Image 1: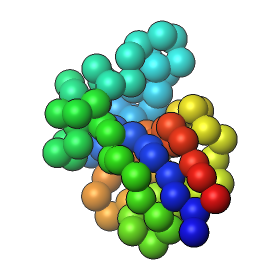
Image 2: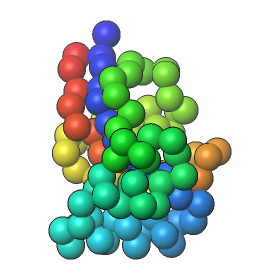
Image 3: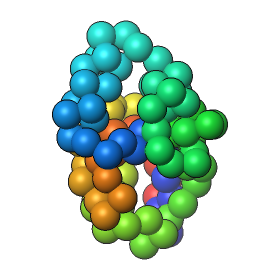
Image 4: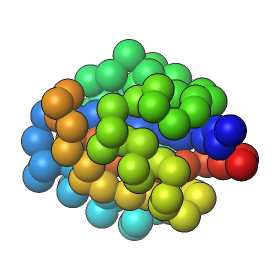
Length: 93
């Protein structure tokens, strides 16, 4: 069964999400931005979600996590919780 490790930043607006993505592309540290801006409890650990398999996260999340390139920031991804930046840090089949 596939398994992935990922981290994310959850924010309320698409604009903020896009701004954070630009900051990361310009060299800002993903984990520091997660600690500062993420509304998810995982923000305190740099957005780290640990390991999980398909179906353990909301469908929009799963679709990205199990298809996107590893170590490349994806988003904004809209879910019922808000807007996410996602980064798959590793994936195993």
